[in-house]
Amino acid sequence: MMNPVEHVEEHERLPGVIAEILEILEAMGCARANPASLLSAPAFYREESLLEGADRFSEFAVRFGMKFGCIPYAAVDAAFVSIEDFARRYLRDSFPEIPSERIQDEAWRWFESLRPARVRTKERRYPICFVLAPARSGTTLFRAMLDVHDRLWAPGELHLAQFETMGQRADEIAPALLRHLQIPEMARRFDESQGETARRLSRWEREDCEVPVVYDALIKADPETLLVDKTPPYSSSIEHLARLGEWFPNAKFIHLRRNPVDVVRSLVRIRLYESARTRLRSKLNPYQISEMIWFESNTNIDRFLQEVPDDRKCRVRYEDLVSHSAEALEQVCRFLGTPYVADMADPYKARPGRVALGAGDMNVHRRSSVETRAPAIAFYPLAGRTTDLAARYGY
Image (cartoon, rainbow, N blue to C red; front, side):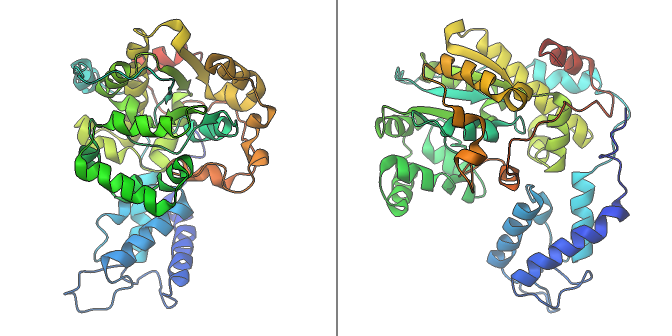
């Protein structure tokens, strides 16, 4: 069944996108911009462009991403691109053609060959919890709910367990902004200034300290408050999950599940599938790449949790979290060994303003209450293994 939201022609969306870009540029002091204006160009280019210099263009990219609720991959190569061309590129990437065929079996071969690597490091046996889910599964809202509880600390995405050392993390996380979004929350955790926390992170990176050392510091800073780390990229690799299992042999894990159609549509809309193109070595349609991300992440989680005792794992459906919040959160609190707090069900009321600081879904701040809606109906042919896994999850 075709979802009408997906089927809107580019020319119908284009004027609105151009108008929004012009507003951004006007706020940046580019008042005389028009759809044909050149956004950016190298310094040696002699004709006038609006955003000269990398810093100015980076500012535009951040503003664009915040306004459109997306990762501005279209900004990576925008030299000699007009405002209208940039808008078209954004629309083409965010609303690509809907595929008409299922993913073919040969496209799954890369996944079936994956095996976890062994991890060798000292075990940590203190309490800690990890929320495991693909991106766009509702993890930011979930952690905003958990963070209302004064005995839980659910910060923005820490992006730690993808790496064995902080030096590796510094080398591989780009842009650097993603490494720094954690500073305000960490500073409060350490009860120090943001400058002190920034210097602490820089020292860990220079010394290339092991990532568990960072977890040690975060937990010891407030041992009475349970650290709940939700960082979706952890589930993109069975190696990352195996690392968590060996680093933290008594950790608890929450598997947050969501209807694949909603996850796929959201991954495409904000173009998070772009980051998976190289890793998956795939030329598939963006919807199909996003479908594989959903399948890969959830399958990795299922494989990993098979080896985890029942008392250390919990499964929650996003749809239950938003439609029966109190019941779902009571289950989570029992699992974590802490009493349920009624304010958790509505973090917008409990914490007016920005409900979830730090790295995560920026769209969560566009709402004023928890949004409830039925899972979407498939609007293109999903692969058989996707529908089988979704059926196991109750979709």
